[in-house]
Length: 303
Ligand SMILES: [Zn+2]
Image (cartoon, rainbow, N blue to C red; front, side, top):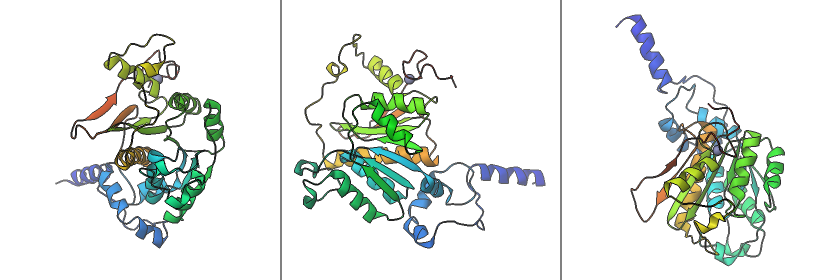
């Protein structure tokens, strides 16, 4: 080999994430290195990009500030995953109190919490899980886009995580508010045995409304102007769920969040992915192009 070949080979290896500087300083205190000693190797495994140290992705997660709306089944599992994984700051928003019917799927609550504000019980559980994470919260009901805009405006967040399924317009509000703020966001939930998560970055790929239009067209759902979208996809008074579907949905949500925050693995935003328990192995993927005439993101500069 020539010296040039060797240099090129090293550059290729570095670019593909196979070369790290073993002498680079590690700013994590020893107890955090031990806590994340099983997670960091997986982040390295999935990281196909250049990096200085094995800890780069973990350090990016540690710096991240996340706003989480909803501490039910999906949100509780997502919060648990994010806090266990070592996200830097998590601010939780949830208005409800704990009920017995929550306990089949909501992991942050115990029987002794029944009647207690979910927020108080959740903060105690999450803080007991990982005291290195800065965890805050507020009892608040999202009643309109202005509530989301207010929350986002107060926190200099890197990501919004939507884990609530009401009011029914919450995703549309999140989409519009995040596009206005230029803030990436993720959402997840379950419809029966199907658990999915969506990944959105304003200006890159489809927004939530582009995807919804694409999915309606794919399923040939024709909804007239002004007609209630719920006609196309009616909901029950309670969203049926087990601990399994809630855990899946929450884990997909936490994965989407950590991927956007760390870049590991690289996700091209503007899609939904998931699992259908009735059809194991059947790929669940919605990806549609960004619509030029989208009422939410059409005004953004094309990529
Ligand atoms: Zn759009």
